[in-house]
Image (cartoon, rainbow, N blue to C red):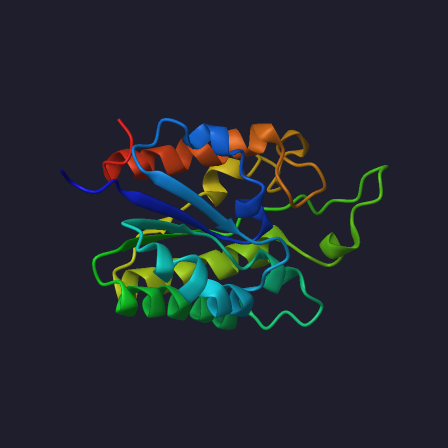
Length: 194
């Protein structure tokens, strides 16, 4: 009898808040290891406990939004580099595991009648795309699959549609359903979903 497959969702609050009922038909034991407020270095610090110890067959990894939102944002190369190094450290310990790294998600950054949360001040989706381009480039170099969720979420005006978000950054149920469209295709390709 073969062991049940294990899937780990690894990331920050965007993973933490994912409506897990969307994963109900996934043919694996699914663990959500999102942690609200985590930066990529904080994710790296808990990778052993939250990912390696579970010996997953597949990891869907998402991170970098908090690094970008910090007042002392260190740039696309730093954030992407730390994300990829975290994935590589997991793969060194679990060479049979597959990791797919998601793009950063877009944000809503325009001023509206409602005050936006302080974190969107001075932020842009153009810079998020710069981070994504660097993640995609490094994934190509390291032969780690890159999952472009950004394209499914971005509106025609270059912003995260208001219907997809609760506060400009975190997603609404409708936003998560758009992410699920992308992730479900990955899970079908990886034979975790029919």
